[in-house]
Length: 395
Image 1 (cartoon, rainbow, N blue to C red):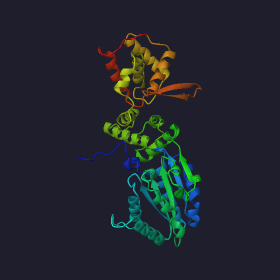
Image 2 (spheres, helix red, strand yellow; image 1 turned 135 degrees about the vertical axis):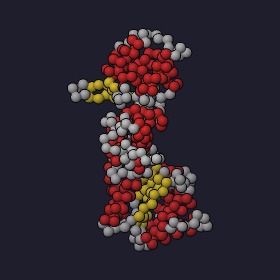
Image 3 (tube, rainbow, N blue to C red; image 1 turned 135 degrees about the horizontal axis):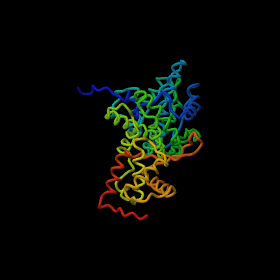
């Protein structure tokens, strides 16, 4: 019967979606603390507050804003206080009319799409907020999409709501953007905000991405199914982007690939297959551009890894000697082999990492993140064996 096979890898697929926000955000504690500081006057005294969250894609801006608002809502409820918040994605609602309608429908789901002017809608919105008699937080995600449409007057009006409101009502704003929002607002709008309220979200480091993968896998996957080095390999792939969304997407794809194998394990090759489907840097043209000497070196590395996430350069060199003998070519010394590895790393065909071993020495390890080594070996063997390829060895 359809859909009756039990999952051996994924325990809760919702935990791998972009919409899911964990109870605890890994490596965003400092940003949460800064938001708490900025919004303390609102929680304590009902005063309007603001914050700009800025950083590149996948750095946790949206998740942090959602987590903070949810935590603030719970805190207020537990301490006899009231507040409300609404979250608006300005990429989807990038006009003044669209944003106001979205805000109004938070209070009145049946509010008509047409028939009211912007001023009439703003008056209706103000009345709803006053009736609620509590602090109200508006989160504008990707707000630069709204500002590019010259809708600064809306931001100005929202920022001025609190001035003549009755009761305990106030309006606070969190604006999220990849760009510096303070530089996009006009002077009138900016006068209501403080430049110092900008919170930076830097790209995640490799170690931080690895922690994120482990935390998400713990929530989403069946315990014990993920091989120990999978998280590090995913972090290696994502480190050039610093993008948590990318590594979570690849974790989800790799887990789905592992499900198809019915082995009950999530392995390094599943990650490579996922990466090849999503953001592969390996192409036929890149491989064809390699001279035969580097093709042999890359073939040796692909064979030496044998499905593992990494291989030491020492072990790769031993396999390189065997491969060179197979093709009737002299193996070059360590220094030249290392040059080949560095050249291919620059081409994004492989990655290297230096680790401190328990014996006290430092060892270089090589990974091939973008394609399963078995598939790469097949491609290289075909190229090296093909009579039409330019395989003239000049040592």
